[in-house]
Picture 1 (spheres, one colour):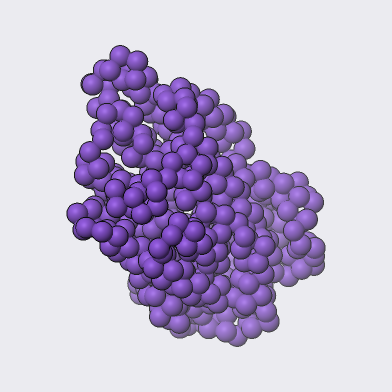
Picture 2: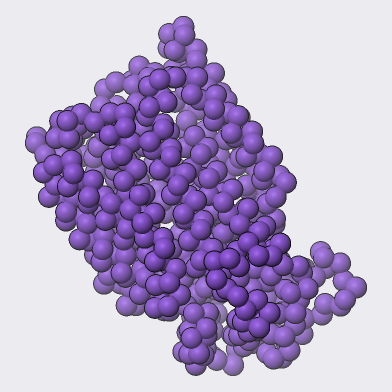
Length: 508
């Protein structure tokens, strides 16, 4: 019965988060629009720097909102931040659909990015802080996997409007962007606020009520609810008393936070600098380079690729708690290195010898490369869930903002540089990513920590030393009346095993 309630909890939170991801990832619509002659004609056939600006301006808008988003999320609540972002994006979508000049189109996409930051910063944090303990990792991972649900809508909408004469061929996809935000504005009222945020604001009775309703069918005396509630309070008290300074400088003041920062910035850049954005934003140019110039064929490949990506990413999101984060990141990064190298070889053979078989093999390598990227086997489902879970509550919003800032900087750089470099260097530009992916493999091997089997508070404490995690767990267990048999002489493996078993037993 409790598991059924947990499933309802995750489903209800993910409904709104899913619409947010659809809205967020409809920015991939730009990839489809670049194959539409009507769009290119309307904006004077943009190329080079102007094409880079049209793609990058949304992320520049995201960048402009980062100084404000953590204060809105921490000060006014996760739900308010999500709703505010959706409201801004609705207005921006109207402006983009009505655009009659390149300046108006750029301004609209800037506003979409500005609103997106508030929703994107708060939504995954809300899911992580509300989700049922044993389903937290899969639900947060599935949240980011819904990237491709938006991409599918974007790709097939532009494919469907390809033959519409005039500007409506690109105005219709622009207008559809607003539908998820409209739904989100109406549905956000049915989503619970974060119990951790409520506790931090002294609204403990509301927090307990939410935990009881979503994790134990309304039973506030359920052992799991009591344990979670006491652990949340203990972690917040620990942050206030032991780590009282929770400003931006806290991210670099101690060794544990520097570890977090290094990993967050690393995976943020890796998620965008692994060659994936060369395909995501400039597939039409890549396909043209290997002889596929028909817009209809380009749009069809783009649509099929996104359906393929969505299926694989969802499957990977369901496996993260079984396999573990570190193995998934390692397999993903090493797999991308192998298949990107093979892409480079195929591209070189086609460009230098006109080898048609190599050109066709290049397309197959794109699909295999994305299988490694999506399957998350790490980068689609895990980058958000892993980043959020390694941060303590007091730094969660600020730390996630830093992660998004690094991700946006990497996107903006890529979107400006990729079209210029691809035109200038051709297949040789792919060698840059071969070297970078080799570096990524070494970084993940050296620095990424495994977090499987820990509660949210214990995962955050892992970076500050296991004693902090043990202190929080024992305090929560003592107050909740739960036996957590960990001795001072227990090994690291035994400590983790005891915690995992205790939480799983409470969850059943």
